Length: 192
Image 1 (tube, rainbow, N blue to C red):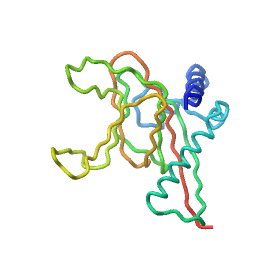
Image 2 (cartoon, rainbow, N blue to C red):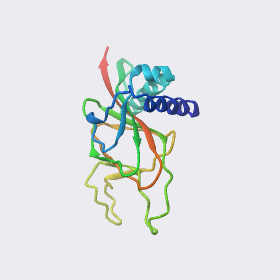
Image 3 (cartoon, rainbow, N blue to C red):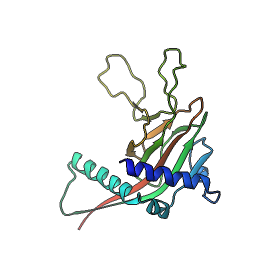
Image 4 (tube, one colour):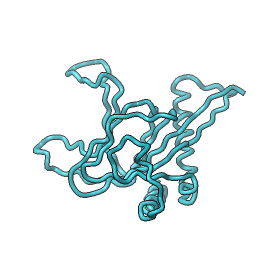
């Protein structure tokens, strides 16, 4: 929703401007200069913590139903265990990686860099996120899995995925910022 997007933009603006905000990049794979730690109180102050927690719970509920794992007697718990902002500029990128210490990873796009038409007719994948889940080779007319899914970031888009799924973010050339909030979460399903 627009109000959540605005609140997250204002929160991350404030974190970026505050020299006391803790860097989080040393714990991450990215070749990105500005990756800042977001604490639960930051999210609460912005009024966004409930929204993201609900998104995680909804994701798990949908997965449970899709895999016929639903049992009305089960107790399902979810929790966000780490969160950070990613402020990506020209030539910065995230190499192929996955996330540890969690089961769910997510990225919520706040700002994107406008694509340019300077690729001489080639597709501009600059700043896109790619998920690699198979061999990665695609053959014409193949009925087997492709192994690669690519998404073009847009403000307000939230992607959630299993934390062990390999993913990468391409660098881009030119002015502008690609900003997102990324987070990791856990879940448990137990019988009463």
